[in-house]
Structures are given as structure tokens and as C-alpha cells.
Amino acid sequence: MIHAADVSASQASVEQILHVDLYGTALVLHEFGAVIAAGGAGVVIASQSGPRLRALTLEQDQALATTPVEELLALPMLQPDQFGTLCTRTKYPRRANVLRVQAEAVRWGERGARVNAISPGIIITPLARDELNGANGAGYKPMIELSPRRSAAGTPTRPAPSANC
Image (cartoon, rainbow, N blue to C red; front, top):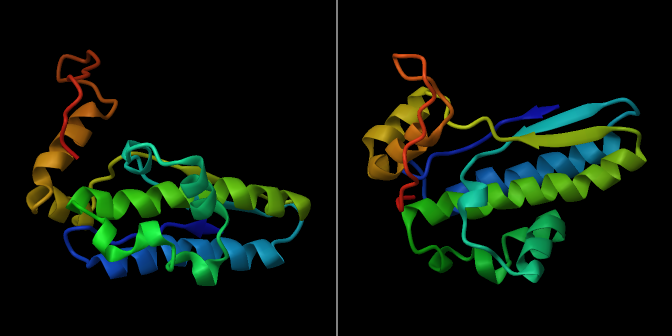
């Protein structure tokens, strides 16, 4: 199973982001975890933005990781009025996805299967181009600059961290 569903913060409402990025991922993990065969494997394509969210409490992390799927969107921290910025809209679901994979890995392991989350960084797709050229472009550009890459001279580049999203 490979799960890579995601919507853009510049193209979707908070509600859409929570339903697709958070609820959808939790549902896929839960349903596949109930039927995955021994030797099976899953991967969730996560995001580098989840870890960039400010630190949450242990209780909040546990709630994101283990709240039953049908109750997840009712968590107080996930109510749309709790999201102050465009950047924060995507960070909660993306943090939650990594936490849910960690929690589901135990259940999947009991069935003899494994599940992992990977965060490949920015992949330039039409959606990424919209982000780069949209309202969040100022926050997107430093993420590209901080990605591992080589300059034209072949030397690694690593600009100073940005305070942006």
C-alpha cells in the first residue's frame, strides 16, 4: 500500500485539508491495517512540514496518533478556528500522519506486516508550483533552499534557516 494523498494549503479550505490529509490518511491506515497480510507493507508519503510545527503536548501527540478515526476531526486542537496561519493548516495533519503511522506500525506488526512514513522533501509538481507561486511562496522558497542539493560548482549549499513557514 502506498498512500500519497495531499491537498495544497493555497488551494483548499482548512476543512478540506483536514478531511483529505488527516482523516483520509487515518482511514487508509486503519482499514489496510485490518486486512494487511503477513509480509505486507505500506508507506505513507509524509511531509517535511509536520516536524516544523511547534512542539505539541504529549497528550496532543497521543490524541493525534491514537484517537479513533471517526472521532479524529472532533479533537479541539483540530477545529478550523485553531489554525492561525496558512502554514499551520498543513502542519497539524502532516504531523498527525507520522504519529499515526508510528501507532499503526504496532498493529500492523501484530499481523506480520510493516508500515513506514517517509518525508522526501519538496518534489516539484504542478501542485508544488502553485504553492511556490501562490500566497505561501515566501515560505516555500526557503524550504527549497534548505533541501539537500548541489550548487552549479558541485559544492553542497546550506543557507541559513529562515523564520518563514
